[in-house]
Image 1 (cartoon, rainbow, N blue to C red):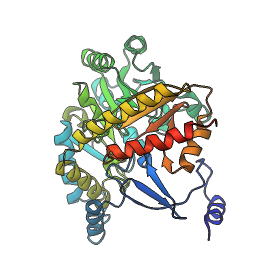
Image 2 (image 1 turned 90 degrees about the vertical axis):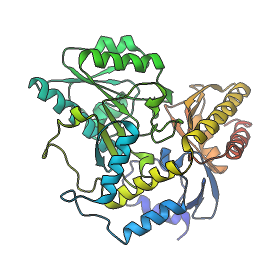
Image 3 (image 1 turned 135 degrees about the vertical axis):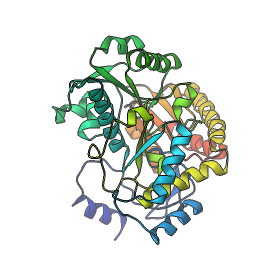
Image 4 (image 1 turned 135 degrees about the horizontal axis):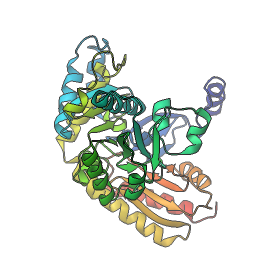
Length: 399
């Protein structure tokens, strides 16, 4: 069966919830993906910021193969060693003492929202608390996570969603203050907005939100699903700002391709959830937790965050140069190896991205007019140079 025959057959059964490129990926190695026809692609998407250590990594593969032969699943009626060990390591790295493992980032958001509301309920016995989220944010597509996703066209077809959600402007502290009420129990935001267009939080904004939460007894929830796990040059992006959340969500690079997410919380906050309040069948199973431990091992074996800071600065500089050369590019923003190149609103960006992928470079869009660069954290400067070469070749001719 050739590529087109496979795509036709798959389209006959898969729900059309993704506008997929007509490529069948077959295997990967390092920072390169290969399709079923043998064509290679330099990957600056990393499975949407998932494959932090690239493809076919021998240490990660070896850990997973050994665990598959040992134990894959038991249910959360029992303890398993990989999950317990991973929880302790994440708690130590973050300073947040309790961890709940999920299967995805969306599930981590769901758990964080439930925890915030249960904590508030225990304080005053009321169940009409409100949560402030940010416009242009993205937290997932389940009913709960969609409720705090600040892009109206995602939410409209699925209303009514969960109530008590107010939206403020990201990086606008006055806007957040304007949405505060006596019912506000939590403020949720991405430390760096991803799908919304790669917007890092302004230091004054993030510190201001933390201060508001401290003054009013409100929980600060930071979504680090895309920007966490070393992507910005720190293990967690909030570590750049000198703040700490009360609740944090993780996923994506936590498992480097294995389905695992987590929400973490301070001891006092986490104590609000008791047996029966929350659960998951497969969350934190031995195989996924083994992936998390292998990822944490790799972070400990070398200065990954230092490498990200160095190569991320180089990537930012090369993108700034590119922005200065082409009129259709209006700017660059980002942090570490989470960068965005901003194009004019009227520029046919989708056509350009298709051309770029056809030329052997994988990138994704964000926020409608931004090319997002979230490569594996192991890329080198020569990979950045190759990416720039391909991208410039695609920009030379009108789309």
